[in-house]
Structure formats: C-alpha cells, structure tokens
Amino acid sequence: MSYWALSLTLIFVLIPLVLSKTLNLGLGRDMTVATIRSIIQLLAVGYVLKFVFDSESLLYIFLMVALMIVAATHNAQKKGAAIQGITWKIAVTLIFVEVLTQGILIGFNITPPTAQYIIPISGMVVGNSMVLSILFLNRFTAEVEDHQDQTELILSLGGTPKQAIHRQLINSIKASMIPTIESQKTVGLVQLPGMMSGQIIAGADPIQAVQFQLLIMFLLLTTAAVTSVFLGYLSYPTLFNKRMQLLKG
Amino acid sequence: MSTQYKPALHFQHVDYRIGDMEILSDITGSFPQGRITTLVGPSGAGKSTLLKLCNSLISPQNGEIFVKDKAIGDYDPVELRRMVGMALQSAPMISGTVYENLNLPLDLQGQQLAKEEAIDLLEDVGLKGDLLDRKVKELSGGQRQKVSIARTLVNKPEILLMDEITSSLDRASKHEVEELISKINRKYGTTIIWITHNLQQALEIGDYTWVMMDGQVVETGESSLLEDPKNDRVEEFVKGVVS
Image 1 (cartoon, helix red, strand yellow):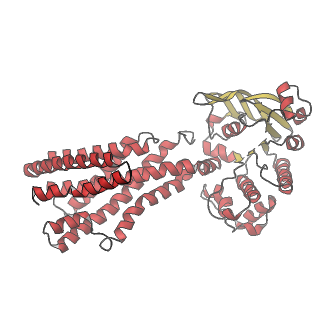
Image 2: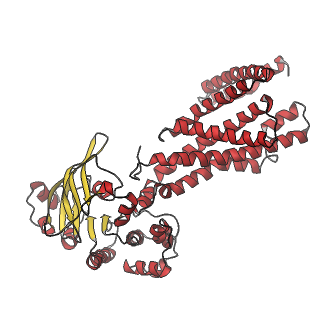
Image 3: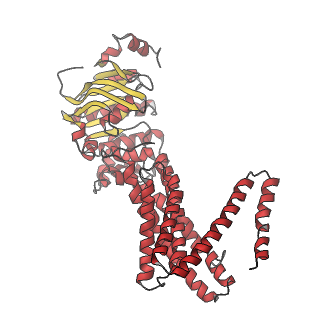
C-alpha cells in the first residue's frame, strides 16, 4: 500500500467524526485521541518488531512479551479494584496462560520458536486474556454484590466460602466465555477474522490462512477458559477473611 | 437478666462499627439457654447486626462473645454456624425447588436429605408435602418464610436466631409459626433469639426481652417489662412514640 493510499484511509476516521459532530455524540475527542494513539503505537510496534525479528534475540522476544503482559495487567486491574491484590492475580493469570499456550505450540512443534510466530501469537493470547479478565471481573464483582444475601445464606448454614461463592463464580466464568464461543460459532459465515483477512490481502494461500486461523481460534478458546477459571479461583478467597466472613466494599 | 439459666450466648462489652459509624456500643448481657428471648426496638437500633454477630457472619471490633462458655473466635466457623442457625426476614432462597432449598444444609456437608424427612419438615412448619417439587419462585411470601425456617431446622441448631420472620405473614400463618417456634423450644430445648417489631408477640412468646435503641441495650428482663418499663425511652417506645 502506498503512503498516499494509507493517508486516504483517514476517510474512515472522518466519517465517524462527522457523525459524532452532527448527532452531538460527544465522541469526537475520544476518537481523535484513539486515532492518533493507534498510528503512533502501531508505527512504533512495527519498527520494534522489525528490530526484534532482525536481531533474532530471545532476550528481546522475552522483553516484548513481558511488556505486553505489564500493559495488559495495568489495563485490566482497574476493573477489579474491589478485589484485594488483583494486579498480581491478573499478572499471574496472563503469565500462566502465555506459558501454557506457547508451551503447547512450541513443545508439540506446532509453530517454530521464532520471534515471527511467538510475538504475534503472544499478542493475541495476552490481548484476549486481558479482555477475558475484564469481562470476568466486571461480571464477578456485580454477581457478588447482587447476590450477597445468597452468599451469606450459605455461610450462615455452615457452608465454606467456596460453596458460598460457587454459583456466582460459575455464572461469571460462563458469562465471560460466551463472546468467545459465540464468535467462533459464526466465524466464516458472518465475519472473516482479521488475521485471516490480513494474510489473504497480503497474498497468502487462503487454505493456509484458514489453517492458521483455526489454530488461533482454538488457542483463544483455551485462553478464554483458562483465564476466567484461573483468575476466578485466584480471586474469590480474597473476598473472605479467616473467619469465613464476606468482606464488604 | 435472669440468673437461674445457664447462658447459651453471652456478650461482654461488645462494640461493632462500620467505618466511623458505631452500630453497637458496649453490649453486655446473656441469652439464657433453652429460653426464648425477644429483641425489640426501633429500626436502626442494631438488632440485626447483633444477630449476625451471634452467627459469626461478622466479628466485633471490641469485646468478646461466648457461645456456651466458649469464646466465639475459638469455634470453627462452619461448626458454629451449624450450631447457631439463622432465619431472615427476606428469606433468601437459592434458585430451584423447595426440596433443593431444604436439602441445601446437608448438601453443603456432602449428604442428602431423605424426601420423607423433607416432607415431615414441611408439615412441621404448616406446609403441605406436595410443595416439595414446586419452584421457590412460585411460592408466596409466607410460604417462602416457612421454607426458610424449615431449612434452618435441617441442621438441628441448638440456638436459633430469627430476624422478623413473621412480619410478612398473615395472621393465621403468623400464629402457626409462633406455635412452631414454641414447640421447637419446648421439645428440643432450643435457645431462641427472636427479633420482632410486634410487642404483643414479644409478650406472648418471649420469656425474656432485650430492648435496644441507638446501638445500645437500654433495658433487659422478663418480657413483662414491656408492660411496665423502668426506662423512660423504653416507655415512650412501648407507647409508640418512638417508631
């Protein structure tokens, strides 16, 4: 794509800006900031990736993935402020999911252990794990607040914290996984996934693009399940004290 | 409070605060074992908070609570809560059937309540056995309250805490529940601590009464104190001046 053609893509930013202005949506500032940020961030990442790919250094790969995890943790922790120690719980979850998925991919020789594969796949895994963490924490804090009477009922009948929070935990895990499962059901029918579309536009064989897309989709299913279950079981004990009392606020 | 009965529960200079707000202040007194004690007082007096302390759903910042002469903190919370049962005005239910709710206390222990026992429990609280498979969302307020009481009884508690359990019941159901609680008290020697807004109920059912106001116990004694209070504020409350 030429720089002129790339500049013309800003038309797709102008359309929502005009709509926002006309309808008084008040989103103009946010969209402008988002556009500028995405240009700067993606250009920077492009140059960093080129440098890392050329260097073929494991240290740089590690640093890139670590940076992704730190940024994702920082973003997700705001949604779980009510849960004690949520920052390290999210960080541990993201690290666990990343190690598990890369361990399987590299361990079974599904993808080669090179920066070209590790970094983009890690980006998708950590990014999805972050979104799942946010969805889970949003739902879980709401469930705990809305069903406080049920939690206290089970405690008052001699249940343990795990038993008292079980329903809320399961509901939150299920709810946070639904978008991933639903999007997989309609993939190819309603939408062509971004990565696959990108490969096809770049001239790759569509069948090979589909194969990689399937790999990513299955990977993201594991990411979704492991993130919400792992984060859920790390989070719930901090809602209670040693006397098995529900801590409030 | 009477001294001829052993205390089932004893409060010793108990304070409870939420943040800077004092909910209970310097509560001292005993609930006699095997007797019915009613807690009366205006809304916001701290009565429900006091019940939660008895069940260890919350802990005081200062003071000690003793359950059968043993500090509450020395009990395993699970063991304590099975011994000190609690029924609430809101009668919270888990979604599902009446049986699933009655089975809940045993399910938490990895056991199962026999259907026959469940039917007996329902009949004990004045409900028909055929309600067993009914969804709880189809129950009336009164039926929910009775199921809630029956569920609390599954653990066979030695101390039973009840928070305004008859306030949403019609006159006939209220009378049935009063009879039931009296029967449990007589038959099993269960200690009952009962929050009520109904002073007539406190007089008729309760052996003893604690009158609470603004987070403090202002008068205690045999329930007849409500007919001739010594404390001026209690007298005002009884006459309906303080609501």
